[in-house]
Image (tube, rainbow, N blue to C red; front, side):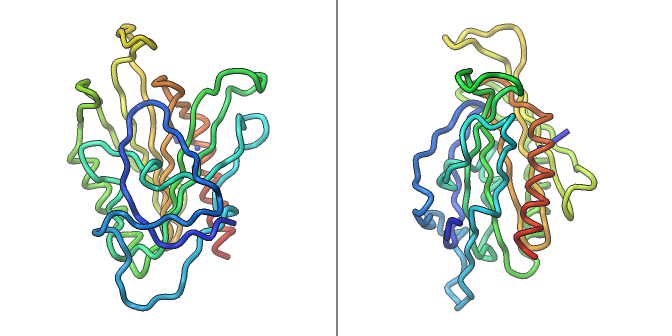
Length: 234
């Protein structure tokens, strides 16, 4: 299973853990490139902007808080290395937003169930297809990694009938309590990546405070995000 900010080109990589991340960037703030390898080439290009309307918004029954702008560096996950930030110089723009979701039927005062960090990349030429190809290879080469000294298992699989192509990455680790003690169970979170023509979106689902994400919600969100991006491109 899976789920207008005028921001100029930026492709950065951030640290990720199977837990919560924060964001406080105002929606009108432009994101500046910090990773030289992923900056667009210096040749003249038309200015590309990614509006807020290109990002998915949760339906009211799932929405704990409205989507908000997030630095790309904070939104992109990492595993063995720079798997999700390898857009290269064919990236023409990138931007990220975060949505916080709740369990359906829970009151607004309840603790959130998790957050989904969505990043959108736009590319020149075959850059989007190349990104997906490199990502599949990187995920295959990373069957496990360590987070804070603890092993995290990684599994990737293709997802049919989502955009032009899509990949689902599942990360599984030993669950711990809030005081850091192992519970004897496992926790997991998922990353969905979908391509729509020359655009790629990365959806990084993180359960609240290190708990598991929600695969059913992510499945809904990634399909909604593909439709939203397709509508933006038309």
